[in-house]
Length: 158
Image (cartoon, rainbow, N blue to C red):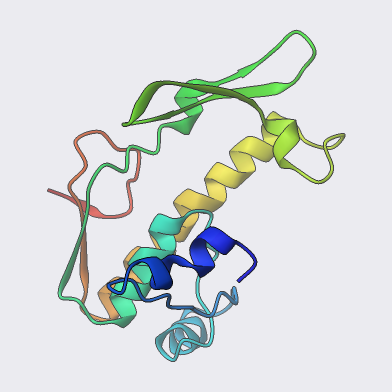
């Protein structure tokens, strides 16, 4: 691992074990795709860690996976400034004030980055949940969204 903080976690805490997973994205016919997913040869595109966790929990055959605190309301914090920079307020439960981020600083090709890039990324995140909902159902795993506020519409709500 390149990040020394993460690489040294098991040394600092014997209760932590680092576990790697195979992040190879596969799209195609659902029957073939799900066969690859089941054998950990591929997984859906995961724009965030929640999607990866749902996938891993599904393959571990949990009977039920409950999602808490996944509001996914990033679009509520987005704006475009006078210089056409896409700006977001990165807010979390632990930092309601948030910090302002120019999204062009988070990309390799800032000249091509625009509001379409931001919404394309969101689209991929929400689409992955639709794929994961079908995959979990095929493995008899129930994924339930127990978040009080959430824009995720792929899973049953609790």
